[in-house]
Image (cartoon, rainbow, N blue to C red):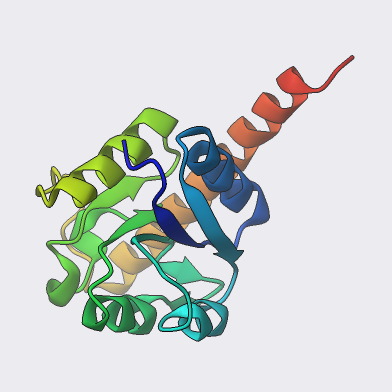
Length: 165
């Protein structure tokens, strides 16, 4: 468990970002963010001590890869928390751990624990490998949007269960 780690959270969907922050706090981590944009995340690198980063790949249509590259240059281990599958990642990012949305807290924390230990993460397999065609890209976008909706619905249910009646 990466207790005490300062973890940058870059996620544009507030309900999902809130869940990531709560999971990290419950594990004893110190969330930095959440940052909803690429620019906000980039502004922190080099000014804040970061032990790891959890990055959504698509920030309202803007790819997170420039921030991931900046983090890589600063030696900050990272993982992607996304609705995209491993096959949708550009070749340069194929080895980065990926936690699929919707996610379970234990899966996210286990992936962070592997980052801390320097262990490789299991690669998420996916059936769709034709990401270069327009049809496949549209399908991936539909899957990603569906995963975000499922994740937000789960977060809302969790919040409703914990609120006093």
